[in-house]
Length: 524
Image 1 (cartoon, rainbow, N blue to C red):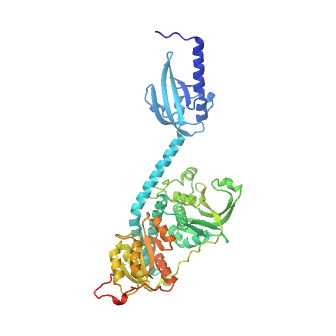
Image 2: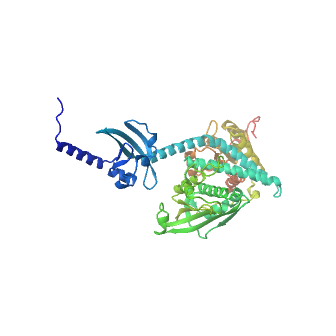
Image 3: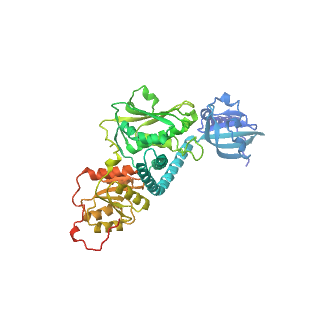
């Protein structure tokens, strides 16, 4: 049966309902003719694109959808593309373009849905996965790389200490030391970026951190850059990770140096800062209160607006390929946020850069950072058992400790270490052992050795970044731990600190030392 013709009022009612549905649809809808001239736009389209209806009727679809010409000529075409906002922004949208012939005329219906937020979340997910991949990569290579850096830093330090100050070779060795320090800094950046390093905050004085880092920063920036530091007396205490704060200074100093290839001035300053209601408008991430401000400024090439907008993003760099990783400022940003602070970049192209770091002030006195002792103050006496499976590290530890006056016993693995523990006739004052060893772990080895030598001191070292939980448990239990890579003076100072802290403990020698059988050997 043929359909009965509908009364005129029914068609009018349907048209009215259709228009009402179109006008109140959550999707942005544009109606255009065959040439693409826009005939009508609903309220959602005006809201999405930032135009009024009158303005939209003066435009064509291709002006709003730059990639429209690339779509296939089909009745329906669906894709993800971009549309042009009235203010110049390009918005990510999902587009359904439907072509229809109505009463002999061709029309185009463009249905747009804003997917900018979805794209942002997808990008964050990709970034998180990339960081996870980096974390796994760093965990896999950091151990071996840190072992290599440890040997380089130790031997570089030994060479420097044996060369007279006027020797031309001393300058060359210093370049080796600086390169190794930069390698250590790069590994630390990757580790921090991959989230593989435990956050170990303590009460700090940034004045002491800056003072302690002064000599190293001077070497990093080179002789063509003048390093000036100033600090406010009575600086408040902050709650932050000491190693991370040192990393912040290194990264900012290296960035400043690279911005001054022909030389310049690098200024590092600390000051107390009161963030009141008015000043808080410039620091939207921070509540009003008392803060400590660390300012690092340079007289270099500065940053344009685009560079400042992206400078804190991971892997963003303006340096040529092979000259920069794009990790420096992003690592600083992550560290500062973890410490509940905020980093701000100021300056303009050709006018230098001023980096401000604000960290919340806390009550209480800072934990004192020990001043580095002179080389002659690090000498000591006693017997140290070094248990390390990496030959380069083991030999370098032997050379530095033997040079400081210690008798050094060496073991490549837990089996050899146990043999030394059983056969060495004298006392073993300290066992310096890697945390991760073939066979037993470092703590398991120490437990066995202390069965016969209960008074023996212990220092754990490790270059693995997967051991944060184990390290934290050791530190919480009062055990001494030193992360790789380290310099010759740093490990010598740590050993000196442990053995000089108290009188020699009883029980470092074997319980049955008077009844050793002959024929046993000591590994040296």
